[in-house]
Image 1 (cartoon, helix red, strand yellow):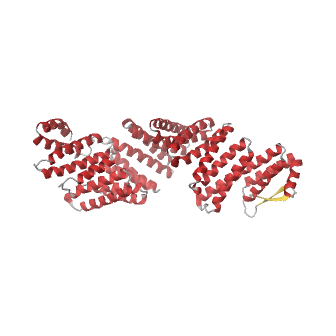
Image 2 (image 1 turned 30 degrees about the vertical axis):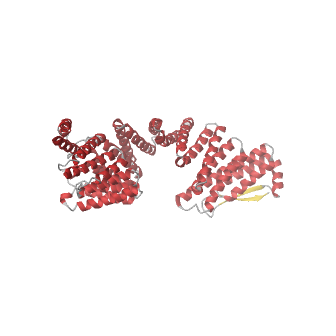
Length: 592
């Protein structure tokens, strides 16, 4: 093909000076460049391929209008248009590709062999998939697979890579539609076909083979079939290595994804050293890709770095994890500066990961600084797409409130917590059941922030509202079973523990200010809380609050209690829960 490329300039000159013999020769040379026979030769860049296809269409369009061999040139014009559509797909111009395919089918008098019709179906399925028309793409891909199955029975029309390529596209579209099990079944069929091919046949479908095995690895991992994924991944690694020199731009992204999947499978099977090795290979491959294609490489590098950070955390290599997370955050910051619409959410996620690293290391100041950057990134993303990012913005605002409290900025913690509650309430208006628990969490954070600034009445109100929301969920049947139910029970337990702290603090603050009636109100609420839960920590805090109030302010609190309730001040009696054999303290209440 290199010789044919070298002949293109003189052939163009010949076509211009002597159109009758020159134009057919130029068109034939262009078509030869578009259909190389030797797969291991590095293919031309997509833009160059598109230029050749457009030139071939122009030449054959002129030739098909002449009287000499008009029908033959119309057939070739249709083929040239098919190559142009393929080249447009390679550069991501899917709508134009569909238009060109329609023009190819509309060439008057053009004859289409069954294999050429199958190729056109395949291209249309890919274009529809690229446009997000997945249902239409699935239909086209299924029709294409059927066409190639029929062709495989006719030796003259059989194409070694036709059916595997069509099956891969069919499986890809199924996966995009969320039909993962069916997608993996189609990939399995395709893999069996490829394993049965001879070495010579595999040379013509080498890239399809590498892609199929890599994508099958991802599908098996998604289904939790980790051992199978690791076995297929070894085949994918071998298939991709063969193509590194010939088509590196296609293979390197494939290898980054493959190594990432292998790392996740190793992580799931507790083979942490192998998982780390695979993650490091993914990072190295992404760096190599970045040197050739910065845009694609940096996107894959963020994925690889995130995977490596997970493996380092699992191995308790925290110092290394901080370095990896910092690199990912720096990379995403640069990407977001160039394309904020696309990369602000990714930047926010990376910053959240880095903040978690600083939290684990106990560096509160660094955690606060990074959390503020994370909040700013989510705020920008939420301004553009509120439906997608407002929930995360509320979560990060609550985290920011906690970070400010931890660093001593008690009053500065209230503003983010209030905003988090406002956003959560707004989201709950559209889907109450989905946002009930997040709203309760934000209220709990707000209550904690208010208590630490001494606004005990507002703190108690926030915690009581949070408890009420979670109790409503239990009463309305949202509790369910399993992990989700356990999570909601844990949320309710933490909320009640926070409410107990706020009520105890409120009672003490009222007594310090010589307001025994208000203190009694808080203590009665605390006693009611102990009757709604069997949590020992809540009961212990109730006992301590009552005992402290009596010991320090007995002269004021005992008469106020009697006046408010008509009963004596409570005392608490303990008995060991011997019937359960747990040693847990059970409590009873008597009056003095």
